[in-house]
Length: 290
Image (cartoon, rainbow, N blue to C red; front, side, top):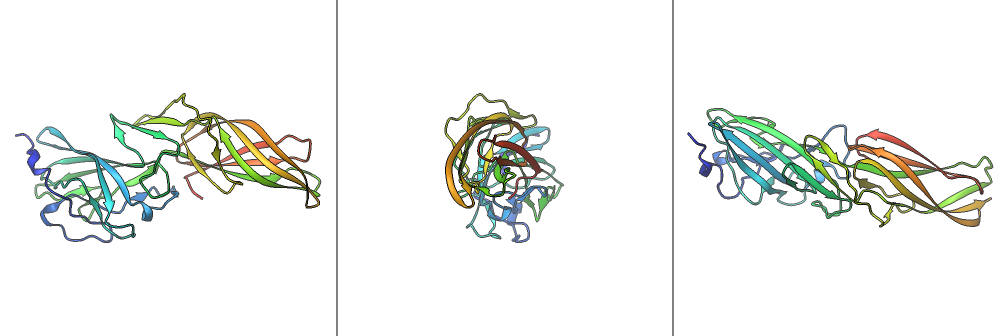
């Protein structure tokens, strides 16, 4: 017997959330509060993830049917604890079926790929990141789901697909009379666009950006596309002697490094005494965080 698709597509989802679940009539598929993978600290925490896109299939009686294709799941409002609702469709748990779900924040899945542009508009107010998650579930003869489920709701655990970069600085002069003040730091020639192939990883890209990615005075971080890159880093700073400014300097230097996803990078810049060479070193920490 073929799966009856009419059972799978009915008006708007009744929402529920992990820890704030409500009763669901007719076993509608709900979505619980998502989590960011434990080794990761997001630029926004799971408390601030207010929307994501969900994709999924259902398999029963030997047939697999597309269930969700970029359906939007949002909170009723931006308050943590507010239930998530699929705003574009309602689906119901069907007895003796297998479900496979995918979800993405700040992106879209097409043909098993997620395209990304550095600095693209965010699904979450003012913050750009790229998060991806999968979840699976099965139902028994009474349509009761099990698997990545809490209170009959699908719960996603998101992982970061990008690398996060920031800067720090140290005084490389042996003469403590010399100090410095950073006025700006930026780089160009970073990978502007890339494609993440699910199950494979990031595809190489030849699209480079001549537009500077600015890090302020070193107090700003950015998400970038993983992979080996040669960045053209520009550091501008004032040199001080006994706290008095004596010159303004701007140095541009290449930095080649292979960045990995879900990793936080600190690029340490050693500012030399006048006439010396500026130096870079990179330290990596698993998990994107502050």
